[in-house]
Image 1 (cartoon, rainbow, N blue to C red):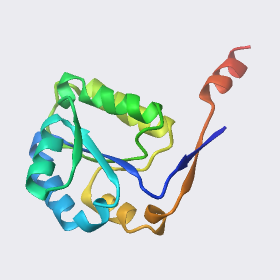
Image 2 (cartoon, rainbow, N blue to C red):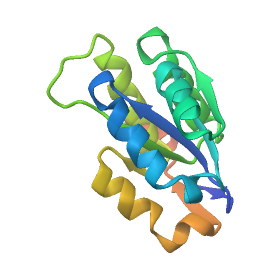
Image 3 (cartoon, helix red, strand yellow):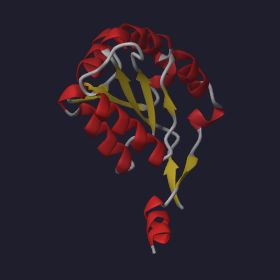
Image 4 (cartoon, rainbow, N blue to C red):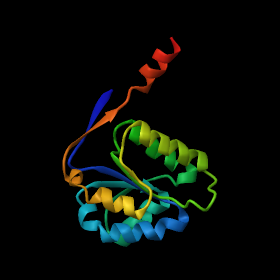
Length: 150
């Protein structure tokens, strides 16, 4: 098991499917005083809209279907994203559903907090751990796989 430290300032990814973008923007507006103390990034249009409508700086990656989900996943695996808020649309099929599934798998693999709806996002943001350092415990799946195969 590897321990990765999250600093007091979290690196937070903000992602939303088209039908949930306005919900995420409203949530960010409501929580802008807390979020302004952290580093924000997001996929294409979502990042751009949040930045324009809230005034918060948000680093933009590509649109999700154009590789943005994979860019976020890579940043998680590199230890450069600590936290993810992903307002997804559970009732609409997405052309990049495999990328979304891969992103969620990476988030679990690297033990980052993930909120996929407003209630969970509210609970995570109101946690005392938001303003503290935190040690994530990342399981060494590679060793487990090798052990099971030999």
